[in-house]
Image (tube, rainbow, N blue to C red; front, side):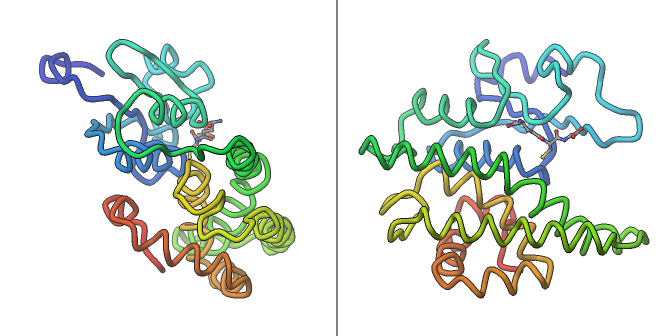
Length: 221
Ligand SMILES: N[C@@H](CCC(=O)N[C@@H](CS)C(=O)NCC(=O)O)C(=O)O
């Protein structure tokens, strides 16, 4: 996991894969702060499994793990808050206490209620499984779409005018949700649901126009 080149590399390191939702969240935060970083490839879905040494970075075997100048961290919400506070660059949490609470609420909502249905229930069932020659579990897809409807309606209710999820400025809430929506909207059912909520559709159009999302290859379809 480390070599002579990495030992002299002072850039923060993110451990994981480029296509992971949670790795993308962390990398978006780094890019928005203007912090150069290194992605160290660790794939929990590789046939050979995780490198045993990785458990020292993340006892639960998830990605990402993060390291900055000898400081080790896992759990995406903690990592992005650290990035926001430890590095210069535009603040990624609102100044106002209630909007900051709103951003935290949306991040929790995304983790607890959006990630599984939007990514695994809708994108994986509708797009990834057929691409790999597997059959969509239609019952699982239908249940996930119902959960997704609840998520989208809740987000709209929390947006308070926007244009971003927690006010007039980009925040960690936007960066947390965007990689989930990126997968969701690739499924026709996901795209249709996003289009049915003009406020969220406008938010998504605003997000995919950002250089940070483009840099990671997140796009409209
Ligand atoms: N609570 C973790 C969740 C991270 C997570 O679930 N990452 C996924 C990839 S996007 C993962 O590692 N999956 C591997 C597995 O479920 O075994 C965080 O906030 O960082």
